Image (cartoon, rainbow, N blue to C red):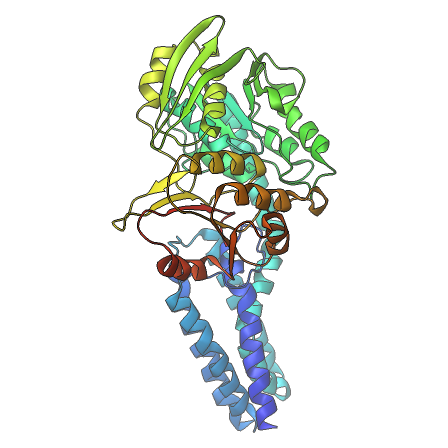
Length: 487
């Protein structure tokens, strides 16, 4: 019986930890294992100690209670150790967090009142105390309708604020390249424009960006990303763009959409409500005022992929303008053309683009060169992985001499019937000498695609791959990290 109580206490503690971190961090309270809230870690410890003390007090009424408490304590130790050794995330406690905590305290008070009124049920306290994590999860679920209503009111209020401002809005959608296009536009328009610091491309993210918009802005730039049918309608309820931009349409979310055509139709909604539209010719959409890319009205020639920059001639209406971008790979050329289409419509000159763009730096984890003192070149393209971006990254990798290594976790959220990871493995095998497969999700397809043309290694996680790098890399090697974060 003692062993059973220890096992039950241990299981309750480990299971209860799953919703705890998610309840305090996630907007939609999705319980994710391993998520944590370091700034509230002390609160977690205090809460556990209180519940443990209560359990010990009630041991006199439940003879086996001390063994249940021991199990809870044993279960708490690995959770505490993992939370301490994992990299810390800076999280600011929010009003929502405190509402969840207060409701949790209320639930404890209600049970305490029942215990006083009905002493015969006092023996449930040891179990109730051990379920502190689950209680927090329940509290978050109880508050879910209230929090959702608060979010909707906040979004409506920010949408009205944006409408009341005399600003020109630019909405950017597409399967890839949204953030780079946004940064290229922002580099020229600054300080007259406002946009988010990251890629807040959801309704609540757009609302937060609008809230921080200072007075005197003339332009508002919004990323408008979708992953499910109906997402664009929600985004357009917050921001109705004056200028709509479509970067590309790729099979990125085919698990949620019924094919690429459905993705295209969803993104087309942004162009339908915009007064002026700019789109890549490869997107194959209707109602486009300025088509960009091969066969379009605005296109690039003489593209030169170099190690530290990309050069090309921007061609429009019979004119040619040399552009130097301190960004890496052919993908930035398409992004620059889209940004140029917007800027030309707003009345900015080619010279202004040339000067502003030469000062740009790559976004973190997007074709970013990582310097080191070991003579190894590291290309960090780990933010997102899609079939077009992989082509551009591998083309850039071929610029280098020496041994080439690619660390890749594959393309996520794609229909297996499209065999994208199989084709990705084929492409990597044509350029690289070593393929390091990160994780198991897409490993079999990547291996089949690469075949026996390349040395294959597999690691369970990104953390494990770092040990492989230390052991495998030597001076003169080039490593391309191509993945979907986080892994």
